[in-house]
Structures are given as structure tokens and as C-alpha cells.
Image (cartoon, rainbow, N blue to C red; front, top):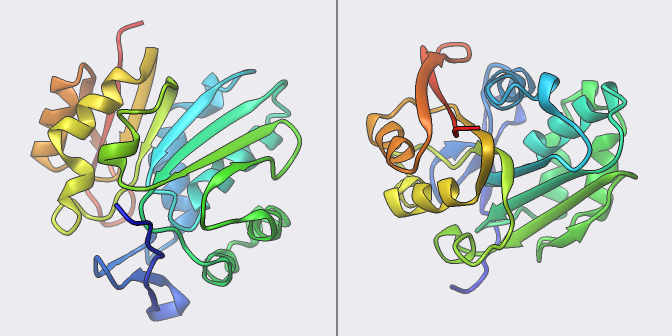
Length: 225
């Protein structure tokens, strides 16, 4: 697959919208609050982060999920190194990424730090000491099975399953499960039945839990310890 850039349009309140998938990159209500509820709380990160902890993600998007995890890491004054690997098929241009993050004042200078180091070609970044970010550009159905890493927590954040079904397919969820460590977890904003079944088939103990805002439910999962 040839790498392609994100096609971004701008909706209400300057919210970034994927023109390719006709879906916003984050909640129109409060993107940061949604990220914290779904991915940080859904993976119980406040009680689990430790030296060497590895978060993996499907869909880097604006980088909001990464920055939210980084912000939590810094607030906890966690020791050692945090690893974050994200699989992204359509990376944003630097200017679009910076514009997308501009509203989230709670993240402070982390926004400009990421934007300044961002390269849509992907690669390994060290935006702040103690944090290693790797962005793997390409179709996750091809790149994830070749990945040799193992995650302690997964942020499953593709666009809506109805509009981006490829990023929620059973074979890809199986690859996610195969690259999850003992006691590892996953979380996603969607409660679609076929996604929950695919995660269960991949080995996760799956639960449907309260979602964010107007979304009644979301999904979390855990691997046996």
C-alpha cells in the first residue's frame, strides 16, 4: 500500500473531520474528556503505568490519545520509560495536527512539542525525556502482523466501524490479541457487536461498559494474567 496523507476538513468549532471516512477525529462534545474516559480509564492506566509500560494504538489521528497518556505519565511522575506505538494509514500534515490540538489548553506545551517533532512519514520520536513514540505508517492489516512488539494496553481508535470496517476486522483483532502481554487490556469507544465478538475470539475477556457523553456504551477487554 502506498502511504497517503490524511484528507482533513474542518467542522463545527474547528473540529477536524476525515474527508475520506466522513467522521470526526474526536468527540464534538469534548475530545480530551472522551479520550480520558475511553482510553485512559478504560485501560485503568492511572493504576497500571510503570517503567517499561507499552501502549499500542490503532489510529494515531491527531495525536490526542498519545498526548493524554503522556500528560498522565507526567502527572504521576512515573519513573523510567513509557513506550507508545501507533499504527496509522493516513498521517496528518503537521499544520493540521497542530490546528487539531490547539483547543486543548490542559495539555499545555505538549501540543507544540509534538507538532514540532511530528513527521508524517512516521518513525521513532522522543518528544520528551522518558517517552518513546513510534508511529508505523501503512495499512495496519499489513504492518501489525509484522510487528514484533507486545503491548500492555491497546487504544483501538479507528474511525466508526460502519465507515472504516477494515480497522475492526476479525483478523486484525486477532493480531491485536496475539500482540498483547499477559494481563494486558484494550479499550475502544465502540460497542458494535461484531467488534466485541472479534475481541473475544482473539482471547480478551470483553465487557460492555458506560460510554462517554451521548454514547451509551463502549468496550473494554483484558487478557488472562
